[in-house]
Image 1 (cartoon, rainbow, N blue to C red):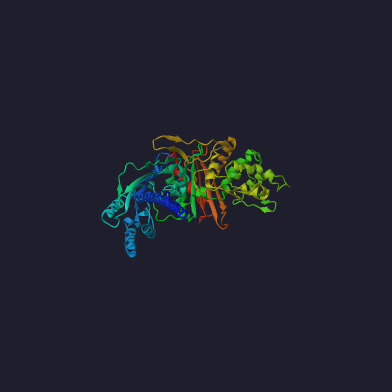
Image 2 (spheres, helix red, strand yellow):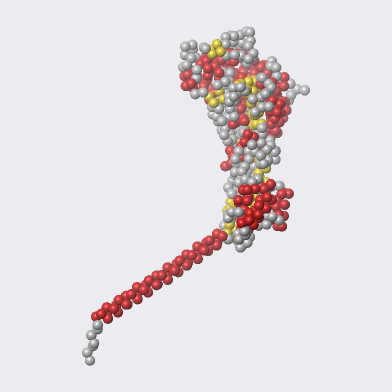
Amino acid sequence: MSARPVDPTFARSRRLALAFGLLLQLFLGGLAVRLAVVQLQDHDAAAQRMERQWQRTLVLPAHRGALLDRHGRELAVDVDALRAWVLPRNVVAPDAMPSEKVDRAERVATWLQPHVGMSHDDLVLRLLGDHWTSLGAPVSDPSVQAAMEEARAHGPLRGVDLLPATSRRNPWGSVAGNVVGYVSHEGEGVSGLEQGLDDLLAGEPGERSVRLDRRGREIADPDLPEQAARDGLDVQLTLDARMQQVVEEELLAAHLAHSTERAFAVVMDPRTGDVLALASVPGLDVDDDSSRPRDASVIGPVQEIYAPGSTFKPLMMAAALELGLAHPAEAPIDTGNELFGKRRIHDAHPQDHPLSLEEIIVHSSNIGMARILTRLVPEGHENEWELMRPIHDKLHELGFGERTGVPLPAEVAGLITPLEQWKKNYTLASVAYGQEIGVSALQMATATSSLADGLLRPARLVKSLQAQDGSVTEQPVPRARRVFEREHVDDVRRWMARSVEEGNCKEVKLPGVAVAGKTGTATSETDRTKEVHSFAALVPAEDPALTIVVVLRHPHGVRYASESAAPTAGRILRRLLPYVGVTLEE
C-alpha cells in the first residue's frame, strides 16, 4: 500500500509550532532564572539592610594626651566621663502622634540641657531625627553621672544610652587658660595649645561594631570587628604653673588698677630660651564652657602687635655698637637740636648738656638714639634705602618681622616697613627709639634675652613628649646664634641697670639685686589717642636668670610706663626671684 503524500502546508505548520514551543520554553526558562536571580539579590539586599539596621559601629575614644608644666603638674588632662547617645526611635516612638513625639523629646532635652553644653532646641532636633547621634558634651561630674543613670533607669532618659567617654579638665583652673585653650564637644582642640598641638595630643579613636536586638539593646557578638584606640601623647611644656599664676595675679591687679584694654607679659630664661610664663589678662577659665568670650581667648604676648617705644633703645644701641656707628668712649652727643631734615623729634625729659651713650639710655633720649642710627646715611643721601640695610637686616636677625614658631595659633609676625620705603629721617630715626615698628611681646622678650650674652636663643615652649608607655622624647634646645659681641651687651646691660637705679620707679628697684630694665611709652598703633606702656628687663643685671616683658595696652590715669608697667614688673620679680633661687636682701 503506497504512502499517502504529506500535505506541505501541514508540515510547515507543524515545524512552526515546534519552533514556537521551543522558543517559549527558552523564554520561560530564562524568565525563571531571572526571577530566581532577582529573588536572591533582593534577599541579599534585604539581609544587608537588616544587618545594617540591627548593627551599629561605636567610636572608641582615644585618651587625649595631657598638657604638663615643666615640673609635671597637670594643666589639662582627660578624666572619665559619660556621654549621652540616642537612637531616636528608642526614645520617641515612630508611630506616636507628632505632638507626643515633640513632648517626649522636649522632656529629655529639658533634663539634659543644663549638663551637656548643648542648646535645648538642638537637643530636640537630634531626638526627633532618624540616626544614632550624641546628645551634647561628655559629663564628668560624678553626682550628675549618678543622676543620669537614675533618670535612664526610672525617669525621663529611658531609651537614652550612656556610654563611657572622656572630658577635658584643667586642675589649675584659669591659670594659663587662654594659653592652654580648650577642646570642642567632639574632643578637637579649638584654641590655644589644645589647637596648636592637636596632632600630638589627639591620638586616633578606635571603633567597635555591636549587634542590636529589636529594642535597640546591645547583643554580645565576639565575631564582630573591633579596632583599638591609640591614645595621644602627653606634652610637657616649658611653662612653670606657679610662675604663671604669679604673673597672672599681678597683671590682673594692674589691669583693674589702670582699666587697661589688656595686660600681658612674658617671662623667659635667657640662658635657654625657655618660656616660663606667658600670661594675658583678661584670662579664660577653660572649665567654664557656659561663657567663652572671644576676647578672653586672645593670647596677648603672641597674638597682638604693639610699638615697643623706648624698650627698643637698648637693642638698637647694641646694634649701633655692633655696626661701629657708636663707641662707648666717644664724645657726648648734642641732643639740643631737634631737627632731622624737616622733621622735629622730641625728648620727654630733655637735658641741658650733651649726652654720652650711657646717658642716652639712662635719660631715654629719642634725639640721641636717632642721631646715632642716622649716621648710617651721609648727608644728601636721605632716601637711599640700601644704605639703611644693616639696621633692617639686624631687625630680622633679632627675630622681628617673623613668627617665633611656638605652637600657638594666630601668632603675629609683627610689622617692619619694607626696606624700599625707608627714609633716613623718618623710618631709620623712628626705629632707633621703638616707633614705626610693631612687635609681639614674645619677640621682644626673645630679643631682649640676647642682651644677656649676645646670643639669640629661639623661644621654646615644648620641653618633651611622653607616650602612654612611659617613653619620653626630649625636645632639643634650639641652636643659639650670635647677634652681638659680649662686650657690647655687657655695656648696654650696665647702662640699663643705671637707668633703673636712677629712675623714679621705686617698685622695680630690688634690694640687693640690680635690674637691667627700660620703660617704654608709645602711641597705640590702632588709636593715636591712646598709649601702650611697656617694660623690659634682665635680672640680675650682671648674670641674668630671668627676662621679663610687661605690656599694658591703653592704661588710664597714668602718663608714663614708669607709673604702670614698671611697678607691675617689679611686683612680679619680687615674687619670682626667690622662687628661682635669687635671694633678695631684707
